[in-house]
Structures are given as structure tokens and as C-alpha cells.
Image 1 (tube, helix red, strand yellow):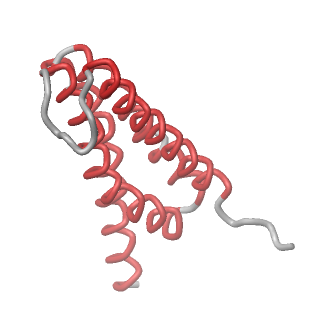
Image 2 (cartoon, one colour; image 1 turned 180 degrees about the horizontal axis):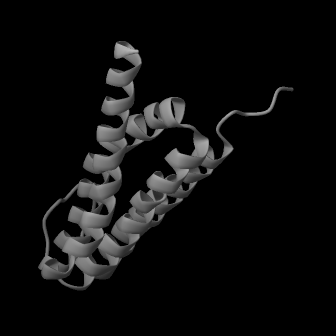
Length: 133
């Protein structure tokens, strides 16, 4: 069996999925704690903050994963993993901050957003330079 070409990027992807599972579990825990039955999407502010963490994380992962793998193909496994690992770290910081208070979400959001922006702009640069050369 041939070696997988992107083991570090694969590990970042798995780490990201583990963070998403943890966030999903936080929503379930909050539903139980606040007695919010599915499919209700309303409740006290503490519940809504947990729900927003999950919704925003799903919104962000749609941009993150394709850019992570495109960048890995263009720049290499090591560099994609170095930039990409910021995303799950940022999601954890974001979740912990937002669950505590809405105004504590910015730092984590920025960490994840920087990862997505660098992956996107890096991919664009590498694609354009490959077309020119």
C-alpha cells in the first residue's frame, strides 16, 4: 500500500472533526441542561450561545476544509498543516469564549479566520503563479 501523501493535513482534518464532535456534544449538553427539546432552536441566552457556536463552526468549516486541502496540494503537507492547525485551535478558543459570554468570542474567531484567509490567499497566489510560469 502506497504511503499517504498528506498525513499532517489528514491529522489536522481529524483534529478539526474531533473539535466539531465536541461542539456537537456541547449543544446536546445545553439542550439537557436548559430542557430544550429537539427540534426547538430557541431558549435562554446561554443555550443560544452554544447553538451559535455550532452554527458558526459549520459555516466556517465549509470554507476551511476545501482551502486546507487545496493549499496542501499546492504548498505541501507541512505548510498546510502548520497553517491549518490554527483553525481547530481557534474553534476551541471561540467556543469556550462564546459559551462564557457573547463578547468573549472574538479572539477565537480571529484565530480560525486567519487560518482560512492565509489558506485562501496562499492558494490563490500559488495558482496564479503556476499559471504564469
